[in-house]
Amino acid sequence: MEITTEKYSVQYDATAKIVTCRGALRLAGMDEYAPIVQLLDQVIEDHPSILMLNLQELEFLNSSGINVLSKFVLKVRGQKDIRLVVQGSNAITWQERSLTNLQRLMPQLELTWE
Image 1 (cartoon, helix red, strand yellow):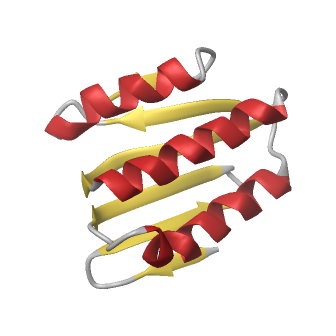
Image 2: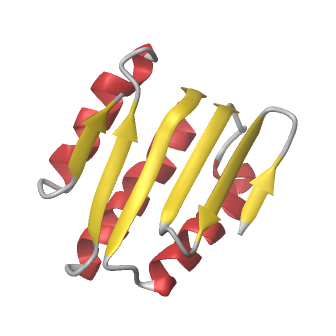
């Protein structure tokens, strides 16, 4: 599964169980994020035991995008048997604070840094 535009891409490798987000997600509101939400919901339906969320190349994420990620983490938390590992980059300033907040939503979320 993949969503690709000139400015960003979100792809799910079902074999490796990795969701990778790249570029800049500056979409205007939740309606524009709907295809990404659908992709993430399909990932949860795949029900991987371990899921990697690679954000190391996601340079920008607006508040609507942070809301989408937060809701995704809450949905994964509700599954109870999916281990979520989020990979962030220390070189991208927004990630440290925002990704740490995701850990507050799901304390068992594993956060790794590049």
